[in-house]
Image 1 (cartoon, rainbow over the protein chains, first blue to last red):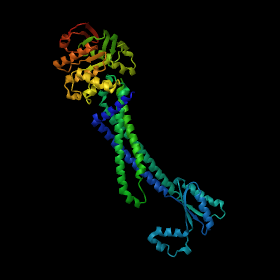
Image 2: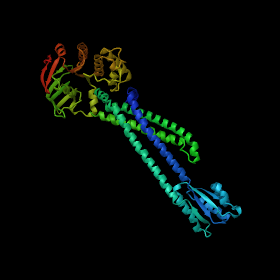
Image 3: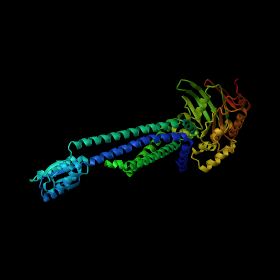
Image 4: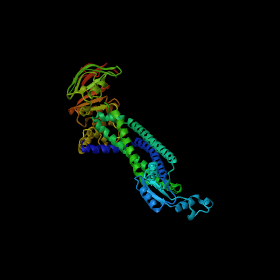
Amino acid sequence: MKFRTIIRHLREGVKNVVRNGWMSFASASSIFISLFILGVFLLLSLNVNHFAEQIESQVQIRVFLQLNTDQKTIDRLNNDIGNMVDVKSVAFVSKDEGLEVLRTSLGEDADYLLEGFDKSNNPLPDSFTVEVFEPKTIADVANKIKAINNADKTKPIMNVKYGQGTVEKLFKATDAVRNIGLIIVLGLAVTAMFLISNTIKVTILNRRREIGIMKLVGATNTFIRWPFFIEGALIGFTASLITAGALLYGYVKLIAMTKFDLGLAMITLVEYHDVAFLLTVSLVGIGTLIGVWGSTISVRKYLKV
Amino acid sequence: MIEMQDIWKTYADGTHALRGVSVRIDRNDFVYLVGPSGAGKSTFMKLIYREEVPTKGQISVNGFNIGKLKPRKIPYVRRNIGVIFQDFRLLQKMTVFENIAFAMEVIEAPKKLIRKRTMEVIELVGLKGKHNSLPTQLSGGEQQRVAIARAIINNPSVIVADEPTGNLDPETSWGIMNLLEEINFRGATIIMATHNREIVNSLRKRVIAIENGEIVRDEARGEYGYEI
């Protein structure tokens, strides 16, 4: 193809969008609406995922030590646990700190429940709070920590707790939520593609005559196809870019509106800069692809001699 | 030059549009194709610009065996054949200039040449000053002139015109005939299907009459020969 022909196709593609103003508008609207719904669910699913992660990351292991464990053993255990590959952090909580934490968490009731307990007669054991990188490894890590006792005659570890049973249920629930989100998003993506390509098909149906005339004056199929291809890409690209813009604008507003209320519940929405790229790229990608795909398929139908 | 040898055309619904047509049309001929509606005139023309292929028989246009043409090659053969219709078939959303220039863009001609040549044919068909009009802003005769300009811009050796004056009043029709004669004079072969008795009888040319898919008459300077 000659360079001037490429320029010609680009020019014709852009001109066609304007010439078929209302049909272009119909295609663009269809893309906008479909992708908007898809985008809303994508954001929803990203946030549900994010919530799940936040909840999951709150699981931790409590390692309770025997009473009167000496400082040397404590330091050694701290090291051993901290050196495990899956462990993100380990924090020593002395029995005095433990009492304070308990007091705080009991609130008003602490005064009479903990009456008479102070540093001298604190019944609580020393403990470690262990956090892991990957919440799903928590059971394994807990078992490994328990296993430290096997190599130590003094058996310094009294008990290891990580919410056994509850944690597994939590993971099942968050996995289910994630999978449902993924299925909805994929289903919507497919629906959007059919909806949009149908609209484009209808708009091109109207141009069967145009294609017939082009063939009559001796245009090759490639020559006819290119401007339609560019037209479809242009409409798809523009419409999806507007959709992404509208969604992100709405999302920023939503973050600002809910920051305070959600903050009280100790959860946050996915940050704007974490969704902006993914959302824009996936919507614009899908939109442009559908624009091109829809117009190419439809034109091909009328190109058969 | 166009040559048909024992051409049969049967459509999918069983209609025999042409039954054993053999004819030879020389370079620079001007041929009227006459006959009742449904006699096979349109099929005869469609075979020439390869809108249809014969069921049986051989047809060659400018030395190309049209019936055996690979689909890929069709556009290139069509560029040497100008086609004109009763309903003009213009692209409604393009201006006069764009409609005509399109036929030259197809052959990937340089932009400057397209502009020069398009303005020339616009003047030739008598539409000077109307190049920016849309088809809807033109009269029927003017639209047909645009269609003719588009058909001749690439200097095709054959012009196929299917009832080009069918939708036009007598005075406008004569304008179009003068234009076709001028194009014929410049060297193009013209094949024109028509029901216009007055034109055929006044502007005497070769007449081929088709009835029931067969050639029933072929005279060098014939008459229309039908009473309507």
